[in-house]
Length: 593
Ligand SMILES: Nc1nc2c(c(=O)[nH]1)N[C@H]1C(S)=C(S)[C@@H](COP(=O)(O)O)O[C@H]1N2
Ligand SMILES: [Mo]
Image 1: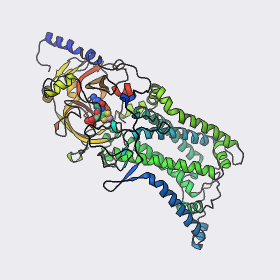
Image 2: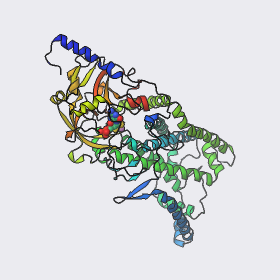
Image 3: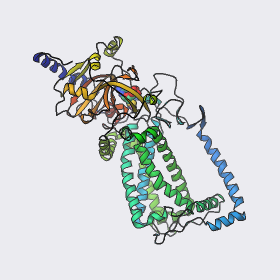
Image 4: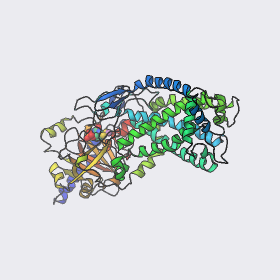
């Protein structure tokens, strides 16, 4: 530790520690990875999941594929019942009183203006990619929970077998492959790339949606999809009986939707879309820590589960919507949305066909394009969503949301453990000879033993961990605030990034490392932890020392920490993208969500 040492020996040590940089950097993988090939994510082999299982009671699991025959049976029964009751006088009276559609406010426009046609199509273009990339993200931790603990066996839905009773089973090992035509992309653990599609298109989708709602309001078109009277419900019942009894209502979507249509459009635009946004934001560590009162109740897992249910709504909606459009007078309906007229001509059909070919090309090409051009995919997402991530980093978050009672009974381990001679030797000696090297652009480089670290300011806090894959857990961390390290080494004003080096290699070889913005390093939420849940940090969770930065996703919290380097730019560290997962799997360098 820096003490009252002579100038010359200090200088000597400084020179030695300036070596921090060459010493660690030489052990990084600096190959440029710009294809997704067989060696992706350490050559993780494909692994398929199982049909969704819903948990009933404590540990009975219901295979949701049974819903297919059950729904078919329910439909048959529904049709049989509807066909009988339409002739019952009371039902007939009811259907006469509530004919199936509400009256529109006076002055509501008819027809479909060009802006609406364009926005409808753009919406489909963005949403299909968002939904597919969302599935890829889900596949990286194919289990859904209601509470913030991600305890095996406590999920309410899983697409994976039960978690094996093996302490070496990691969250990454649990991820599953999707077919390339389902996920975007489908490959196992391609979450880094899926997120760029998901977030990039989210931004475009939201802009499109906001413009859409504004135009709906100013043109008066809103009244066609917003219920203005309670009679929408009995009218929807009439429509449902008509559909089920197979004497389908005469559609006049050009002028007025039936009540069932109106309700489903209303839910899709004004409930599902905002809910998708809010539940998406609910998965951000930075925002969850900032808005603690909300996130205490609606945790990341609650948000994630709702986010998934919104996806289910959209899938069901698109399926039924497209089927009904085609079955209730295809030519006329397609003219409405694709040609802006109310005729039986073929124009709408041809425009629909051409635009659907574009959608299909984007769909089919999505995964292969991503494998061939991962860097441009990352740039696309970063350009659209990067500024938002930067902005989330500036939320003023403080610890204190959780108590001992909130500590998770199970905390998934993740990542590749260290296996170097050097680490083993230190470990066998209980880290007596361990030294954390801190250097680079600092005035006072340091080499800190565990005793040195224990003598520095001590902080303990109970926080929630958010893994990029989707699992979470609460733990109590004890260690040195990063601000104390900064006070000790006094970074040069030129230093903008702080690089944390591990003893462990990443999945494809080369040391695991991560660069973090120096602006965050004085946050109360950033520390070097040597204790977890009141005990010394164990091997799996990063012994003897790991980074905790509660404003970021878990992969940035380097475990088995051996060195810290202050740098001006990270472009010449590793292969230059700011971290091991960034270099290899195109994760982002700011990940507060
Ligand atoms: N050295 C190293 N640190 C690492 C990783 C890794 O693979 N190697 N994985 C990261 C990821 S993805 C997560 S989610 C957390 C997991 O921490 P835990 O194992 O204590 O749960 O550690 C992070 N730190
Ligand atoms: Mo993670």
